[in-house]
Length: 373
Length: 93
Image (cartoon, rainbow over all chains, first blue to last red; front, side):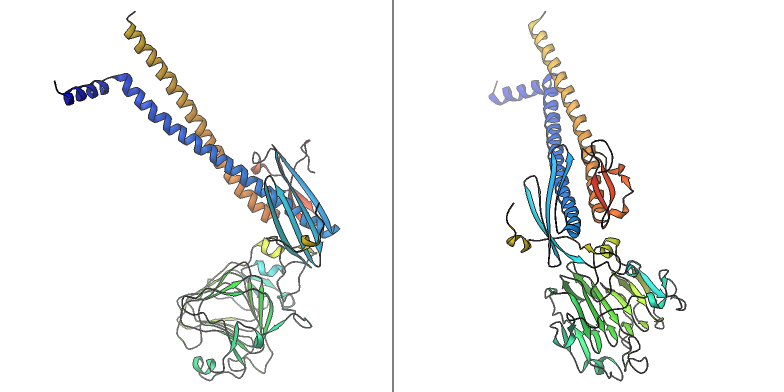
């Protein structure tokens, strides 16, 4: 009998043996079970580490809140089962620096001290004066407030206000109004950041308040304008606002666009008296315009886009007009409660009590001057 | 007794024991997977409530029981509601 015949006979005998087959099956089953058990144990370990990290965040938040009252605070948290975290916070020069530790992890956070919070109106998707007429059909039900309660910028007398004429992201353009409008405008025209094709979102490191003494344009054509805001920015426009294409944000900062009403003789695109144009007048209808900002309309809103998506609130001082043949759908979300409660919108008077702002990761120089514990 | 038969019997018994052990481990792994899933959901909720503590009910937060050994509670701090851990007696700190 040949060797091959012997081997095939052995395999045949093996596969015919119930015990051997059972052993093979159990071996495979055991391997799968062991792999699953190891995976579950690793995931449990990972979740424990994540819980420890959240404990560190909680200790940091508590210490920051306590430091606001006493200048310096140490918080130690014990969640049981060997999970502990501690945080040391220090208040100086309107900022709070936190050094926190949990297990083998050490982290630094910092935040500013806020005089209060963002006006509550900005938590509602749509805000309108109580004496304003009907809202366009299909729009969210507005939060009605008196005219005195409509959020108003408070920039008079501030030394930190930046002027559009000197701001690197605003370019004066004497010809844009003649190109885009039938009769041009009387006021100065400023264009917000010009994004080249394929370029990175333009980074504005510094937030704060910028005033535009004239009209502000987001010109039409090309990809959406992208801005990378590190901090909250409010642009106060003493004229009209023209949104010709989508405006998108990246980064943690929020953008608020405000137009001031009634600063010139009569409302008109030429005079520039606080109107907001979503879609440029006479340029046809846009399919959709997305704007990652809150818009406070001092005067009237004119809509030439079938759909508007706002990642913020829309505040109406006067009415809204939808262009003929335009659906004018509105999708706005307002800001979430934590964004209101732990932030102060630049350029607006804050409400409520002083508080610690939102903690952000980062080493603060406060600890460079402090003696080590 | 035939030695070969005894050997086969012992082998079969051993395989049966191995199979039962594997079954036990598989059940334990399934329970641990379920516990991990629950813990993952609780962690996500904890993160949300850490960001928005006003959304938590006042007092002990039952939905977070088991995430930590101690019970998570919502209490009022100087700047508004905050999360904390219950004391050993079960009350708020």
